[in-house]
Image (cartoon, rainbow, N blue to C red):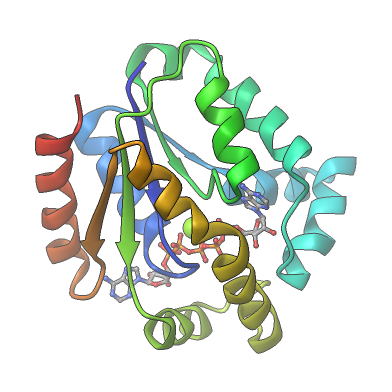
Length: 185
Ligand code: AP5
Ligand code: MG
């Protein structure tokens, strides 16, 4: 099954662009943050536990996230159209689990590159529950410690591309579609 991954700092525009990519290429957009927020809104036990973690800017444990994503990837829509993961993997442990899932082919990992100052301004302007100055600082710290090492992990596998995420949403989308057309198997 066709598999794309969008990486990048919090607030870099992954969710914004992933929706458009999903529409253009027919892949299923899977945002783990959106899934966790939906579980919180439904009031499930997992959702309520995740809410406290998200508001603090911390990461939900790998085993919980891996189980959620593995289950989602088995659904018929993903099996038919392939996937675009947004917000997963976020740790090397998650990436290793993903690569080992049955039937999953990782075609391309895109790093949507936006500097810290710009993502901070975007998140403060958005104002989601976890977009507090403390929450943002903690998320960006965890990005450097846990998620940035994934860039080398994907590069070693020959599937990393870097796309400049500065500019209008349309310009960024044009850059993304160009690398997806060229890069994906
Ligand atoms: P998640 O929902 O993934 O949040 P995040 O990583 O903080 O990323 P964002 O959604 O804030 O950023 P984005 O890149 O999608 O940017 P967006 O398009 O919104 O995760 C939330 C939490 O869930 C985590 O902190 C963690 O606790 C937990 N979690 C999720 N997955 C996990 C995992 N795998 N493991 C462990 N825990 C996990 O854009 C941002 C803003 O900028 C918007 O307002 C947008 O309108 C604007 N914007 C977009 N593009 C542009 C542009 N070109 N120019 C100007 N503004 C723009
Ligand atoms: Mg998002």
